[in-house]
Amino acid sequence: MAEVLAQAAQEKQEELEKHFKKQLWDFIDRHEPETLIERGWRGFKGLVYGGAGGVLGNLFTTVLVLLILFGAASSATQDEFTKRAKENLVSGLAKVMGVAVDISAKDEQQPSPATGAVDQPN
Image 1 (cartoon, rainbow, N blue to C red):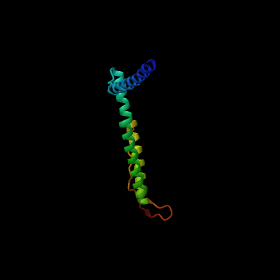
Image 2 (image 1 turned 120 degrees about the vertical axis):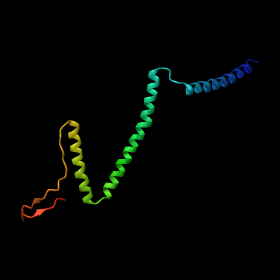
Image 3 (image 1 turned 45 degrees about the vertical axis):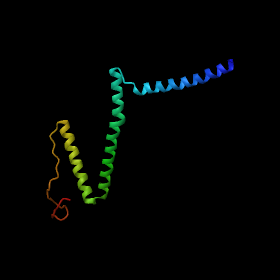
Image 4 (image 1 turned 180 degrees about the vertical axis):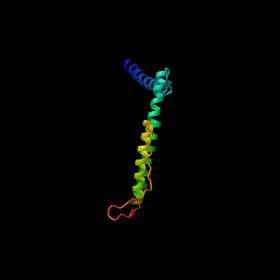
């Protein structure tokens, strides 16, 4: 009789363990953060894992497309783009620092040192 009771108790114990584990996991899944710090931390993690990953993915895609388009452009277009980018970068940094600098491509004609003829800038 003792063995039958021990067997029944063992089966009931396993059944109860499964039942309470399921209830515990259901409670954990439904748990809402109670303090401001908990809610803030959960929101921060969601932003970092969700939003920041999306922003970085979009930035990477944009850079990749620009590099492909830059590589497909002619060398004259690449040179002009590089020149304009440098000018815009220097002008932008100067504005941020509060210095009035305007670097622009001027269509100045300069005499050629060898012949004295006027060269057109590229």
